[in-house]
Image (cartoon, rainbow, N blue to C red; front, side, top):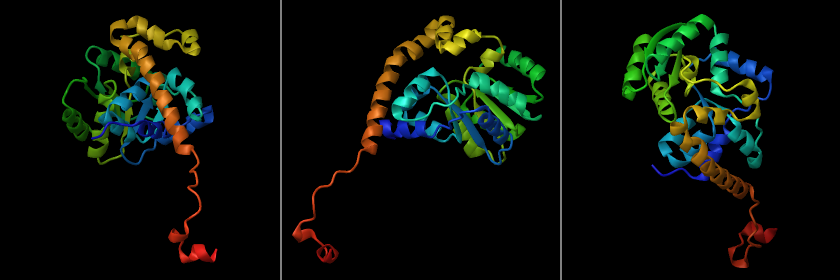
Length: 270
């Protein structure tokens, strides 16, 4: 499998669904509550773009998502440079709890993170949502384990909380393997946030676009590469994506009129 090129990643970014109003968000929530086949919801942020630029399997996994939403300030800043609308910040940390509160009562499976955070998150969710959280599995099993669990329990919603790109790859396999309507949501650290393992930034920090710095302060060892080193990689990636976009949209230059030797009878008549 060849390495991704900038045009591949640009096409992925262009597939993101731009949600620009509360009405569009409500319409999205309604559609997610009425899926008719295995459907994958994913969130793309700056780190995800970096991952896709460096990994063909990760890019393929993101491509298999049915709905892809923008997450975070990095892409908000970058999208105008690519001539694309930014829309609302549809980060999973806010949108997934909203989705679970909005859906009517379902059977939900959570695959990811570890104990005791799984149990703590379930307690929070059972208090605030109407669902039956029937199947909890930590995030370190072989991929096939989750497929067998889902086939056995047949949940209506599967929330994956394994981090990128493992969760997207698991979601792809689940989508391919299950034969009934199920919503598969790639949730990243959502279970850890719900369980209180990590704190959300204050609202003022979220509005300022500096939530990443708040997270970095809580997990400097794990997140330094993503948010600091990764920022330089993301800037380079956006430069390459912008160049790919401009090359794709550049007009094709004429190579001159056809020579007499190469003219067809129609050319001669014209």
